[in-house]
Length: 125
Image (cartoon, rainbow, N blue to C red):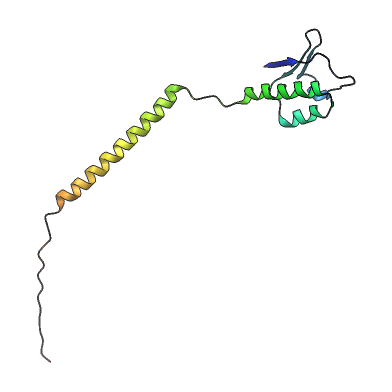
C-alpha cells in the first residue's frame, strides 16, 4: 500500500538511503511525499535525521502514522463477539447445573446420623 502526504518542496541536498529507494515516493508535480508499505520506527528515525526542515519532519511524522494503520490489529467481528458471549453463558450454565446436581445428590443420600454401638469388655488382672 502506498501512502502520501502533502510536501510542497523537498529539502535541498536530501539524499535517501539506497535500501529505501523503492519505498520512498516523491511526486513533485502534485507536491506529495510518500512511502510504500509499513514504516518501522528504525526507518522513521533514519529518515528523520536526514533533514532539519520542519515541513519535511511533519510530513515524515504523518507518513509514519499513516503506515501504522497497515499493521493495526483487525477488530473482531460482531458475530465473533456474540459467539464468545454465548460460550461464556453456556459454560456458566453448565457449571451451575453441575454444582446444583452434586449438592442435591449429596443431600438425598444422607438419611441421618447412624447409630453407634460400643461394646466394653473388662478384664481382671
